[in-house]
Image (cartoon, rainbow, N blue to C red; front, top):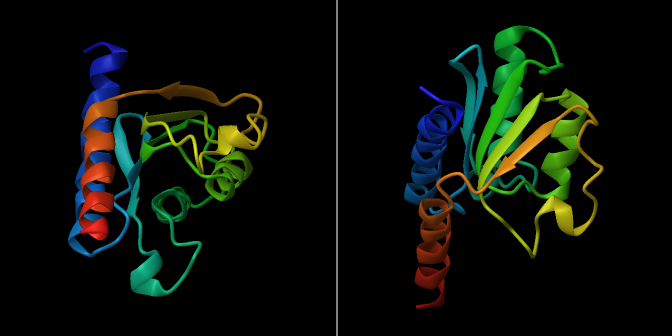
Length: 148
């Protein structure tokens, strides 16, 4: 399996998390953290459920991964998330020193790159656009339903 296939495999797991958020009337964003080919953390938006503006998918997945590993640094891990992280989540990703971040849909309005591309750890590599169409469709259908 090449890297693109591996990225798509784990992005599908992040999409499953996003669908859980959708089912709970949350903004449908999902995330998984992977180390050595194994999911060690997963999460989806729980902002409404927990009445917590910090309960983003990435934050949930990072917390779970750090708990699984027993440490706050995740240098050898990859975070898969369905939408480009916001500046808050990118800050947390930077503090965790995640080795690699892979996302599906870009977020030109709220994504971290609008504010600063330097918020991630300097050694973090980034891949964007993995299963972007599916990730974008989930978000579009959610917001279209809100407008109706």
